Image (cartoon, rainbow, N blue to C red; front, top):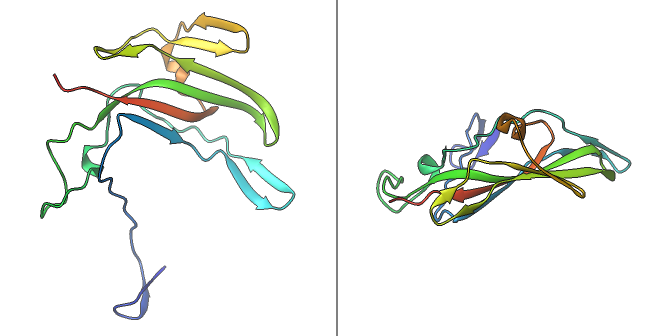
Length: 143
């Protein structure tokens, strides 16, 4: 419950976030560790289903207009990299998936990076996993 300073009561409320400016590169850090006490931190292993292409943040782009949303702001992102974490807090193993991109767009081919092993990823759907820790998106250019 949220305390409303206007009516001086605890009421149900919804918190929203609007972005004034959208970056060209969007980095999303997923909360993967939960602080329980000074000696106990647990890894959160829940699968977060995130899009490989077409993440649309348009409805979260704010403006000074009366309706508070800018319809003309390009706000569609394509994923180009993921950092994964396997293990527990304090130790574990990191891997990454990435694909090339330039001014013309993002390539379809994903590459897996695991220490000194670098190889093409046969199944792009493997990029979305419960091990995903940091997501890297590139804003799609409007042509």
